[in-house]
Length: 108
Length: 151
Image (cartoon, rainbow over all chains, first blue to last red; front, side, top):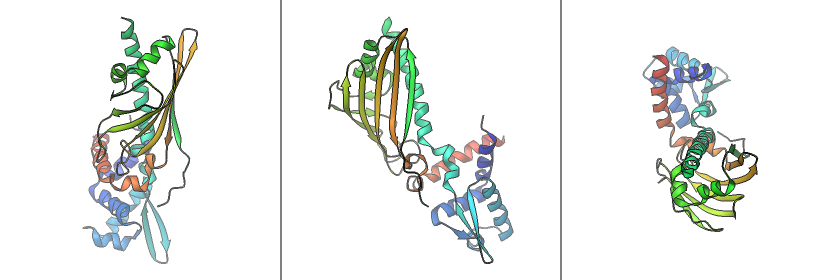
């Protein structure tokens, strides 16, 4: 089962427009809503709404400067999905299982 | 994007296994036995020996783990370096300069087997550099998972 915080993350990235906004922030760094809208094929209010969903999932952070809002990607939010340390921990647990199976077979 | 975290992390697995240390030692140090529980390898049981393990390739990493035996004390202690991966891979297959240490301690009922795999740096978690080549694939995978969550 995937826990609720992960649901937010997956739902936020399930939408292609949001994913492309997030990808652009990953690739090009911090940008204003206006700059993001210029590259998107949707209206500025729609972009703002998508950014709100990404923000709620912890994927972007906003910074206000004058009348502009700047958004940046928060790659740390992807940690549960790309943390190799935890993947490797699972790898070693399963290898220990195999080792124990082998030791049993060696008795025979 | 800056990385604040610099300390390395370890994976520790410890189990009481109902077999004698000598037998477990064989499973840890004989090539044809290692293959049965870990990976294909060309392990040579002596201090200083270099060997390779063959894992699943990922991205521009060919899946080969380069190892060198740094401790060989039958049937108690075995340690080897574990290097492989590529800086372009996020998660599985990311660049790793690490060490694996085995400690076997006899106990009533068997042997306490402790494995410590140390040297996981922040780049093995979520480094921006490590991410830059692989996020597209991660996002593609996320899309599939998200579809499953929603259905």
